[in-house]
Length: 149
Image (cartoon, rainbow, N blue to C red; front, side):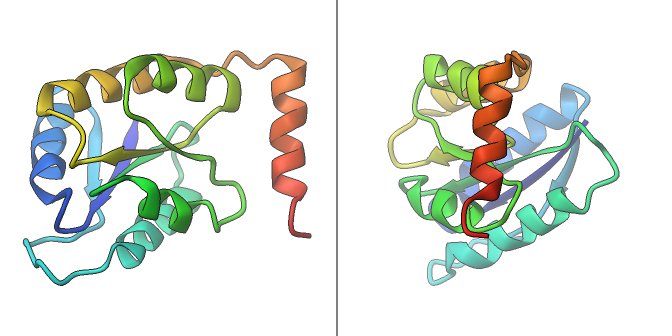
């Protein structure tokens, strides 16, 4: 599975750690920036790069992980793109619900609020949880995709 990953300066170190761990676990990691720690960088560009790559991916199971200080900015940026269901997740039960119920395809992590261990557990849970595919969940996703038309 391809995983597109991006982070601003607040999430830079966590991105490096998760990239290494996930790569060892067999995921294909595609780093969408930042490539070096720059305290004055801005999160929207990294969210856009990761999301555009995800939307254009040839891997139907591909997902993205975005990291900033609160997770909120990355989530707001990602959700501006049709077909993206980005979720800010701060604990494993929310990760499970976001995948199971809403087929979340972008995980946004709040680097300032999570330990490396907590972040790893959230990512592991999010990646391991399949979409339930219930009719009501599919209907709601379709409604989301029709918003703004």
